[in-house]
Amino acid sequence: MKPSKMLSRGAAIAAPVVLLGLVFSMLLLLGPAKPAAADCGPAISVSVDANTKVAGYSQEQLKNAASIMGAGKALNLSVNGQMIAVMVALGESGLRVLDTGDTAGPDSRGLFQQRGNGAWGSYEDRMNPTTSATNFMKALQGVAGWELLEPTIAANKVQRNADPYHYQKYWPEAVKIVQALSTSKFSLQGSECGIPGQSGAGNDYPWKDSPTWMQAGATSASTSPLGMYYRECVDFALWRVNQQMGSTSAPFRFLNSNFRPDGQGLGSALTWKAGWDAKGWPTGRAPKVGAVVWYAPGAGGADPNFGHVGVVKEVKDNGTYVEEGYNGNPAPDDHNYYTRTVSNTVPSAFLYLPVQEETK
Image 1 (tube, helix red, strand yellow):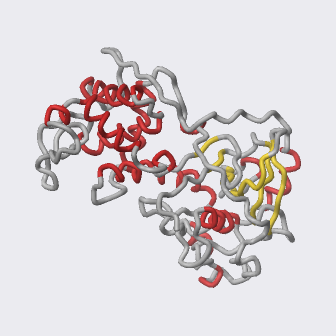
Image 2 (cartoon, one colour; image 1 turned 45 degrees about the vertical axis):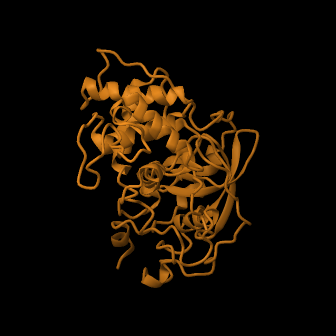
Image 3 (cartoon, helix red, strand yellow; image 1 turned 90 degrees about the horizontal axis):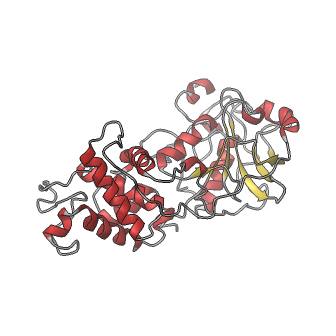
């Protein structure tokens, strides 16, 4: 199978990123570092009136969303928590106060389809948007480390529905609604909701001597246990992701084939930002040790078709960081480990790693 054919299926980045090393020397502009956000999304206030409109949603739905956000503000719940609550209400009731249940829960009622088992208060409580939202959010706050979980996983810890990824498809709409109703605008791209990772011990990539896809003739033997081509930028970066999440030997926790909850492959460097978005993991503009560095095609001299990924090894005080990775230099030093100092403003985004609730 030709590498281009495998790329069409998102298996790995097959084209050497030869331009990256050639052009980087021209791009290391030592500009001031962009200040990182102080926290992972402070609590925000809500504003909605008869003139507030969000495409696809009625005034009733927006008022219910506003009630959820208001309840979150009263609890000093972060914007992330408010979005999770709106996401759940979208997934459970379409942001409507339903006086009906379903097959799985005939006694479920309200915005969050809360059961009549006593855990969610009275019938009147469950039918009240503010009270039901408050009860949901209090339960969410009781989930250890919830702010650093995938939004759908955090929600599932409260709702305990059969499919932990049920709410994932409602996340983009929840973000849109909360942004529209917020008195102070925010951007997920600008939120620095990540955690410091481990920079690793230099070139500890387990397959540093394995043949590249070119040397192996693009056979299955050239694919690592992670499902990427050996000694490509994506394979090294995915190794770091596994390593930092506590998975350092086979069977590895995060693979090209299972990383995204929607079943698509993580793919070449081109699709990594989309992979993070699909998973609900945070991204931003500030380097953090252990974060994946993402270059869109052509950015910073990266390959014009596939882009490039690396990993933040060290963050400096002068607006630069030290990046590590594989296949970031031209031949004959391609497909080898590299480090370089880069200005914070050069990459397209930094992809952060959340703390997982069941890391073992």
